[in-house]
Length: 176
Ligand code: ZN
Image 1 (cartoon, rainbow, N blue to C red):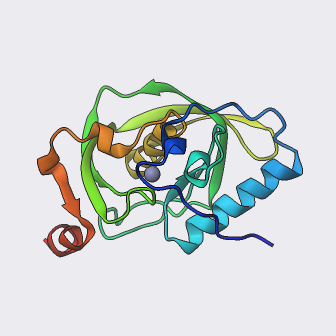
Image 2: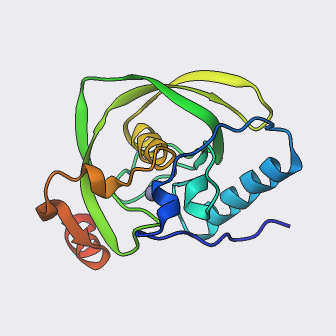
């Protein structure tokens, strides 16, 4: 049975550690990790989660877009595991957007990301995909991709003036 995994928080070295590619996607250990990551993302209302956030230094994350108050048109995606992903192209066009992170509880930050990206990744069956993603989903993927490279969204905030508490975010941004 899937379980909610403990999430590493800001300051824990695992969030800054190098990761290894996954060699045996079919192994029960990897398949169980994927199930538990999906379950954890669902239970915590996350739109994405990366393996280093649950103390596993491997190149795997889950993308689970769904519409929210800021991104009303965000597509509903079945939770999609991306294994050994590589972003092979970033659009020059960039957009700012608010991000939060399960590993940085209570804080939101305004982050610039490419509006469109092209990603090469393996699915949980070992099949390779090369796909273009835009807008909110592209933002999620870039955020999760940072996690497997030891980066957090805080590293990309241009100014501390672009940080907000969750409560202020909900009061100002959602209702504003
Ligand atoms: Zn995160």
